[in-house]
Image 1 (cartoon, rainbow, N blue to C red):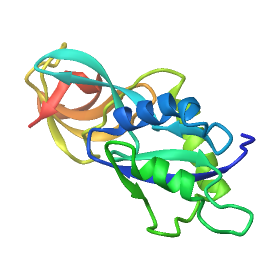
Image 2: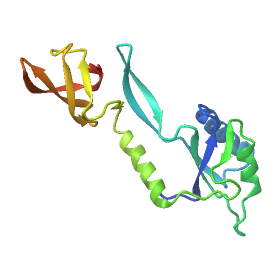
Image 3: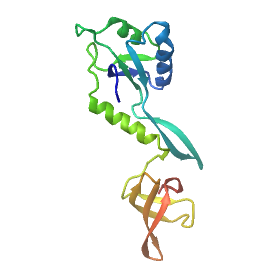
Image 4: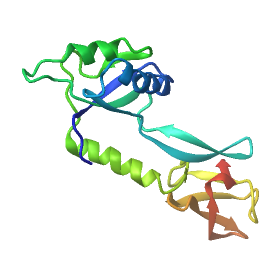
Length: 184
C-alpha cells in the first residue's frame, strides 16, 4: 500500500478508540491538517460468538486501546512537528503516542502484516476461538448432545472442531461447530 507518511501508534483510553478516530477524522479539515495526517485506523475483524445460546457477530479490535495514525510527524529537520503533536494530545480520549517524546514509526513489514490481516478479515466473519487442542468439551447441540469429547483439531477457517468422543466404549471422531460445544 502506497502511503504518504509513516504509521505511528497512538494509545487511547480503553474503549474510546472509535471516539478518538472519529474526532481525528472530523477535525482534520477544520484545523487544516489534511496535508500532515492522512488516516486514523483501528484494525478490527468480524468475529462470531455464541452468548446465552444466541449467535452474535461483533467487531474485535486487534489492538484494544490503540489506534494507528498515518502522518508526517517529523519535519525536514527531523524534529517532531508541534502541530501534529498538539493535535493528537488535544484529542479527547488519547493518552499520547507510543514511544514518548520521540515516537518510532512502525516498520513497513509491520504495517504490511496488519494490512494483510485486515484484508483477510474482509472475506467474512470468523468464529471466536476459545478452545485449545487437548481440551475436553461437552457437546450441547446436535446428534451427540450431552456427550463429552477431547479436541483433536481446530479449523478456524470453517469454524469447526474435530473431537474424539467415546461412543459405546470406542473413540469416534466427530466434527462440530464452535458454538455447539461448551467447556466440560
